Amino acid sequence: MTIQSFIPPRRILMGPGPSDISPQVLQALSRPTVGHLDPLFISMMDELKQLLKYAFQTENEFTIAVSAPGSAGMEACFVNLVEPGDKVIVCRNGVFGERMRENVIRAGGVAVLVDDEWGKPVSTAKVEQAIKENPDAKILAFVHAETSTGALSDAQALGQLAKQHGMLTIVDAVTSLGGVPLKVDEWQLDAVYAGSQKCLSCVPGLAPVTFSPSAIEKIQARTTPIQSWFLDQSLVLGYWSGEGKRSYHHTAPVNSLYALHESLVLLQNEGLENAWQRHQRMHEKLRDGLEKLGFEFVVEMPYRLPQLNAIYIPQGIDEAQVRAHLLETYNLEIGAGLGVLAGKTWRIGLMGYGARAENVSLCLKALEDAFV
Ligand SMILES: *Cc1c(COP(=O)(O)O)cnc(C)c1O
Image (cartoon, rainbow, N blue to C red; front, side, top):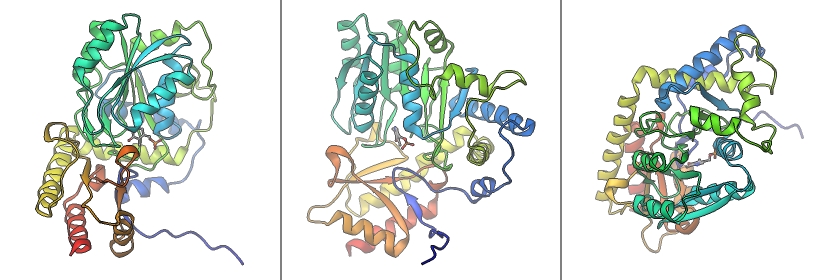
């Protein structure tokens, strides 16, 4: 038997990511591959850095895309910033906070946990208390937008708290970047990582990251080598900068970077604030429809992420069957619950290009049909 080409159907992606991709971005992906040290590609990478700085709202010189998914962005922040013995306060209010703890430990650090209930934001009061009890803690790590629950934490307040106590911050902005306000410089955040496939609506597999001058200083002052060769950002920097004489580190994912460039051009053309507002508007439209259908949200209104709508599944429903029905009948994907919310919730994403009125209408119609 000869295996044929794989031709996927066109799904509407309204889960926790990957999100719907604009045809313009998919087109960019199929442009001719050039050498990754080609002068034209290098100038594209310079533009990409500019565009990423805009998306992150930062002037940080070190703002690049790691050639791997969001999880590698996470790992890049932890292995570079955390030295063996470093104490890190880790906020845990969902799946991704737990992964941060795992990263601290694997980097040889000591994790001090601040736990909050799933679906609640990180409590700044608890963090302040933890800092007081651990004056030797060097880093505060938290998730801005918890995709497992749909809760938004106050990154500005947490950033300020860290600075007051001379600490650095590591911030997971995988789902927040491009979907809700994130102001890296104004909020004094130090190491921030994101993902290409959530509100940037690009192909999966890239992790935008930005490091503040203080974060770079901490990396440069290390007395132990970074255990990961690939994620050692001092080596990667030689590839992303180096004024005209770039050195080879790894082969950049050339076409994926075209796609990221294109998705960021779309974001720039729309305007960051307009993109935030569009996510909010689409969320309100979806929320009104879901409430009419009798669904209840997991997260209280003030902390609700517009781009990730976690709702409780009505009693007595075979949740996997409903999702399979939506996929088969409507080509529509919504997300299942994660961790302690598995089987109890659905997660409806309105991310990037997916945050459109037609998607909201389709999702509401599909859910209504599934229940009538
Ligand atoms: C999706 C996600 C990640 C992981 O990104 P991958 O690209 O799947 O590796 C990390 N943190 C948060 C908050 C996410 O939503």
